Every structure is written in structure tokens, then in C-alpha cells.
Image (cartoon, rainbow, N blue to C red; front, top):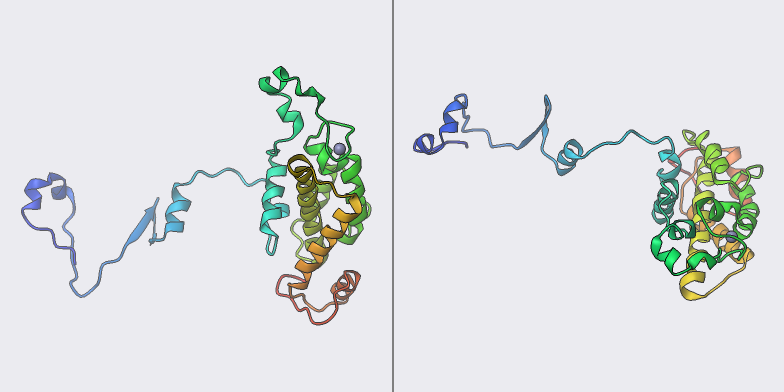
Length: 240
Ligand SMILES: [Zn+2]
């Protein structure tokens, strides 16, 4: 119950400006959060949502974050879309790199070019080979190796909840993740794997993900799962 001692009115003059509060002793106190004219039950998420700054939605968020995405792959996709990976083209812009004459760097996947976002995903001869080997499993056989082309293709289908579009997004994110992982393995561990090994890892990762999901029974989904060598019961809540 909210009863203010009378002496507080002398101590804290501001209390006199408050309208007389009618206290109902039979009702327990509740905490509310006022956001503009809205009065809501207090929750930390509500507070966060009213104090955080908001940017306009980017048109690509659905191809990065979606139900049943693989979180670490989605995070890398987000970094790629924001152009935030530390690629050689960026390092070469540093004064430090110029002083150290680091312009001798080359892409560790193809040894033919300096790596950049566009190069790694997937214009590089090495990563293009990987992409071209896995894309048909994601229903993207006709989609070229340029990142902008891939993103445009995915974006035009981003609102679709069909199983094949889910697979397309998962295949792209997994391929990007495994290519970036390979680049790092060569840089930090001096450990190189050929494109066909990467393809096997990508397909096994996607297949494992699909096996853990429940799909709606439709002819198209059945044929899609057959194509991935997944048989048996898989009934989904995540789209048909
Ligand atoms: Zn390369």
C-alpha cells in the first residue's frame, strides 16, 4: 500500500504537486511502464524497446534472420550484408598496411587476387567452384556467383514460407560460412581443404539441419527431401 508519511510533504515539496492519491488498501501494488500514452505492464523487453534507437528495416533482414536459421551462419550473413568482415581490401587501406608494404597479400583461396566481400562470396575461382557445386541443391541452379545476384534472387522470395525457399537461404548462409571458415583456417592454421571437401561439409550441414525439422506433407516437400536423401516422417510447422 502506498501511504506517504505526512512529514515527507515538508521534506519533499514536490509531493504537494501530486494529485491526491486514492489508495485502495485491498489491492496490491503493481508496476507499470509508461511509453508515450501507452501504459503497459512492466517488462525489461518493453523498457528496452521504448528506450532503444530504431533504424528503418533493411530490405534484406528476412534472408538473414528467419525461423530455424542456423544462428552462427545468420550472424555471418549479417556481417556480410553490412560489409563488416575484415577482408584484405580493407586492411590495405590502413596506413599500417601501406607502411609494411602489405600490398603483396593475395586471396588465400585462389592465390590470384586480393580478397574482398565480393571476391570471397563467391567470385573467387575457388569459392565459385564451391557455390556452383551446391547451388542446385538449394533450387538455385541458374543463380550466378555474384553476391548481389544471389541476394536479389533470395530477396524476391524472402516472404515465401515454402520449404524450398527455406533450403535456398540455408544453403547460401552455410556456403558463405564454410568459405569464410576455410579462409580463416588457411590464414590462422595453415590448413587447406579442396573445394569438394567443403561441398561435402556444406551439404552434410544442411542435410543435418533438414533432418531435425518437421515438414508439412506435400508432394513437393516429399520430392525435396528425397533429393536430400531424407526419408521417413518429417511433418513440419514451419511451412509447406
Ligand atoms: Zn580468391
